[in-house]
Each structure stands twice: as structure tokens, then as C-alpha cells.
Image 1 (cartoon, rainbow, N blue to C red):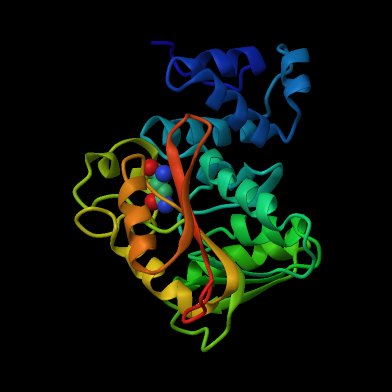
Image 2 (image 1 turned 120 degrees about the horizontal axis):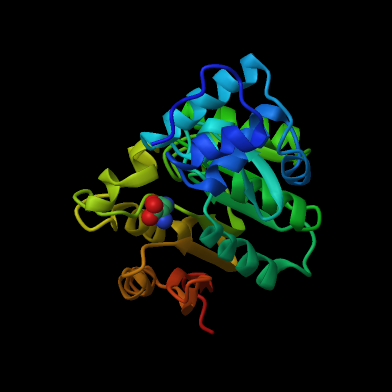
Length: 285
Ligand code: GLN
């Protein structure tokens, strides 16, 4: 083990000390955060000495990472669909897999103006804000039952200059009779006793954003069952789910009366999103 330097070392020395404790990619991100510098500057000036204040800040971030705190919480941001979102322990850290929901929304609504969009369980606001910025003149509403999460989402919308209406509520509870053309959701879907919840970075994320009943299907089922009352005829629902839940979610969509039901694969080749179209009840077509 490399001894902790007593006085501030140079960039190379700081990274060398850190790499014995955490992944070097994480060490570089944390040091760039402390020095507020680009990857290029970090690489170009290995002999640049840290200030004592920078060294102590870096040391404390590395030590927190060493016991498992996610890098995104330590630096307060994470990139999603090419934009930086502020994140903190009140919200799930946006995952690259969730960009599939954006791609599906754009594939179905990218050429249509003024789409009425609902994002359920918005968390950091990553989906709502991205859709507000990527779809032409979209009318986006974002719901979360966590006040702390909504504050993060609102700050992200303001920072990224996205126009989104925010609603505090439990899924559809505070939306009255409003109907949408597109509903997206990345709800909690991990089984309550899944060992994944007590490993690695997810230990630090809000359990309410991750776990959903014995099989992880409780929230997916609630959303699928109620979505028809909030979709216009011809509207779509897309929900992210776990790696082994696609068939079950297609079943929930079938039970709720959806058509054109399908599942789509994420970057890892896993069926990660399922969805369907609502044709409107009582209309024969
Ligand atoms: N995919 C995430 C994980 O496995 C879970 C996200 C969610 O529950 N919506 O950590």
C-alpha cells in the first residue's frame, strides 16, 4: 500500500496514491472535479503540484469512494443523453440503459410537434428534461412522490433550460383526468429481497427508487393498469424494467388492453423496455 503523502503531491503522485485504493478512471474523474480541469490538462501536467486544500478535498473524496459512495454523488453530476444532470442521494443516478426510453420516444414522436408527454417517477428529471429538449414544442409533465427528488428535477430543468411542469404525486394520483400521447416511466423494479440492493453503488441510492414488491413488479403493474385512463387514443406507454421481466410486463400490458405490444433491447442486448399502444376503449378497430 502506498503511504498517504503528508504534504500535497503533484498530479502524478496524487493519482498514484489513489489508484491503490479505487479504480483509476474514478480517481481521474474525482481529481478533475477537485481541480476543475479537463482530462487533457490532467494528462499534460503530471508534475503540477496540488494545493493543500485540493489535496485534502481529493483525499476525502477518494476515501468516500473507497467505501462505496457512487462517483456521481461525490461530484454531484452524471451525464445522460449528452447532457449533465445534477444528482444527489435523493435521486437514482441516470443509467445509460435508460437512454433506450429516449430513443423509443424519438422513434415514435420525433417527427410530431407538441406531443403531450408524461414522465412518471422522474427522479433527477433525466427523462422529462431530455424529452422536453429533444421533441419539438413538447408539453412535458413530470411526476414524483418525493419532494426532494422534484427539487433536483426542477433544478435540472432550470439549468438546462427545459420547460417541464412538475407534479408532486403518487403515479397518476394528482393528474385528474389529463390525457397524454406518450407516457414513459423508469419505475422501481428490483425485487425487494434481491441481493443486488445490498451491493456496490446502489446501496447509496434511494431504496424507494429501486425496490418494488416481492418480484419487483408492483409499480410496473400499477402503471400499466392505470395508464389507459391517461392516454389518448393512439398514445404509447413505454416502461423500463429488469433483465428478466420483459415477458411479465408484456403480460401486464396485454391484461390492461394495450396493442402493438413489444420489448426492446438495451446496449447490453437485454430486453429492457416494454411498451404498447392504447387504441381507446370501445372503439372497434
Ligand atoms: N437498473 C437499475 C439497477 O439495477 C434499477 C433501476 C430501477 O429500479 N428503475 O440498479
